[in-house]
Length: 319
Image 1 (tube, rainbow, N blue to C red):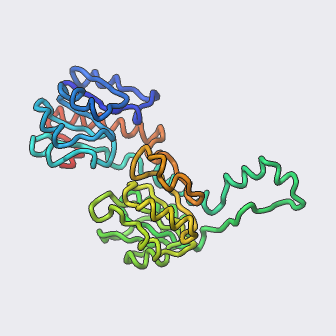
Image 2: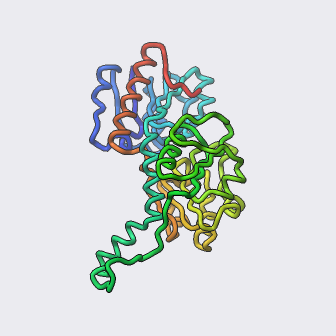
Image 3: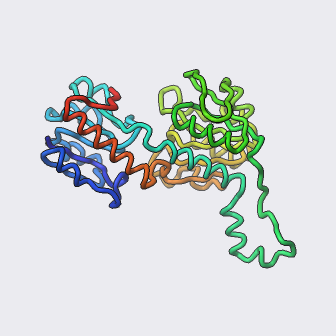
């Protein structure tokens, strides 16, 4: 079996190892990145094709008669035409639940920065403002307390549940809107509510839903208009869930207090993305998944997926 990794750099920028592949396949090739024009050429001899964000269209899959298995170095698999793969009898496996804690951690990194303004106060102190202050303390911007506030969660899988546990630990009221009603067995309690109630009552609204036809562009001007103007929006799910122009306009007009996003509709973003110049929006470069610990876990599940396929029992199959 010949294995080709089309875009391995994000998963392994040099602090992990690929050489274990020599123990499980006949040969392997790792490309840091593959531009669209080279995808077909680099994939032609692969029995096993591995991708993170490199797109595998129906046309590409149709042109790969040798292909037997597609492994995704991520949880999301929308970059692959899974129907085309299924039509050719090619299973597609993803990597579930490897970065739950990391995503939940970044959600609250955003929230704490928005309510405590740590970076702003640090910058102020480093400029000498505290040294020149007549009082022992000052606020460069208002800060607020999370305890007693309402935390809204849209989508309630593993990550949403982990976020709920942290919000409960902060003493927050937790509201959840999910199309898949279920009980909650974490710490504290949550209230399952309608989307309208979630929008109306949340002081923080965090998105934890997959990208589907129903969720694409969900957060738009109408959605935001139903939220509190003092609320914060957090998106660590998928960029296209949010209409970025509408979010930027709402933030600039003060119709929303702030936002934190780890994902954008196009990645890397185009220079004219309106959120890039929006002062009320915190942006990180899709890093919630990328801790060393999470990537190590991802590598382990990837190895299991490859070995299980070779043993005739493919795991984590999404098609």
